[in-house]
Image (tube, rainbow, N blue to C red; front, side, top):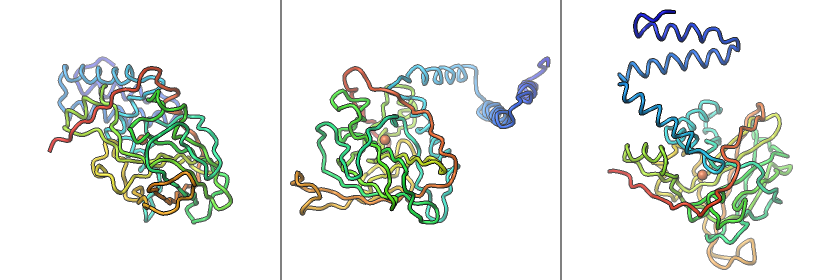
Length: 312
Ligand SMILES: [Fe+2]
């Protein structure tokens, strides 16, 4: 097609997209082209602004490595990860227990006996004893589900970012028992700043946003016959629940850590300790594991943590 004006461009591109033989790929392509072209028209994008956007997208890829995924971080920072999660989860009357995957899930978490600890190198923080259950939508226990658990250290680093933590520190893989139950010991997580030395930092600074995630634990529940569920559990005492830099906090995912000052479930605990109980509901479906966003650890020194202040 010879292009006569700007409207012809959209028609020409859609006509070529219609040649795509896979129906689902064709649908995604056509809707994407309509929205992209519509975005350019609605925003009245200038040539300089278009070049700038292309540069930002290129830098998202350039800033991604085996131990860091800037693309996933950017998707979370624009609410896309949360939108896709909630669009594809049956929220029911009480809301889904699903949440975004985040940029720090790794394959190969160490298998850990239920009740075992995921603290694999000295890690400061108050001990937490977590009891969790996995149910189906009818409330029946799901036995034999594999559950990955991971979280950042109270200093604000995932082990893959931090040469001072053992490989796979604060990560573990559990299997639910006949009651759908698993348990583990860890340290109480703290909120942490997401990295802002790449394009995501520029995006947050431009909007006057902070870069904090409220304290949370990550879960990934996998069992054949059920949709893989990524979940996060947020601490009810965190000051950044309303302004999570990744838009992941739903009411269903906020949890209360019960503080105890008496005898703990382990003899080495002398000070205060916490308990946490959670129930996850997984849906029937295809148990398709995604590609992990990262595959390895940082080789250099731990990065400096930068905290952005939210503009009033
Ligand atoms: Fe996280």
